[in-house]
Length: 183
Image 1 (cartoon, one colour):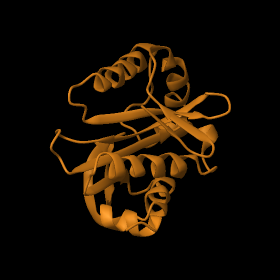
Image 2 (cartoon, rainbow, N blue to C red; image 1 turned 120 degrees about the horizontal axis):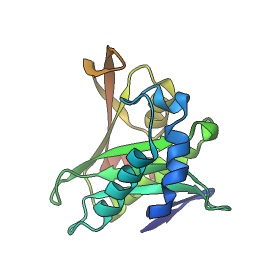
Image 3 (cartoon, rainbow, N blue to C red; image 1 turned 180 degrees about the vertical axis):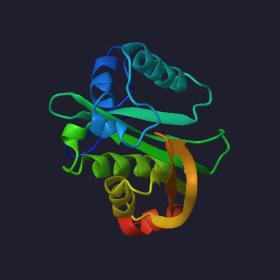
Image 4 (cartoon, rainbow, N blue to C red; image 1 turned 90 degrees about the vertical axis):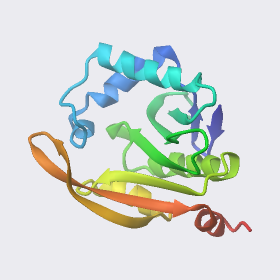
């Protein structure tokens, strides 16, 4: 599977992608909003293997793709849609980007492509995303997609020695199609 945007290519992960993933998942800026405090090569290799295994599932319910720069194929993150089961009419949107590529619109570009896939190819009714409430950049990505804030889960995530609030955003197929100018 491959999705192409103006500046990006979202492609299936390859086994040899793990060093690029390790590079960004080890960055302290990236780690700020994740459970772990560091990453090892073995942990990241196992992470990439999970993504490789997901694409072999029949039927496939998780589509987590490598986000690469179209001109160079340099891996700068990942983005995906994850259904709980094959019949599910809704799915979770997830994404992460190497900190050195933040602030350039890549996360919005990748997630827009993934939402297009979710609604046009998978025929989903609703897509939702969750972020740490303090992560203003991630909130902006979800809001720029036209997603609505559906709720705040107060102190529902324990990590780094404290409780964090998370925000839930969602968008319905008809809302996505309306902002695309579709039927």
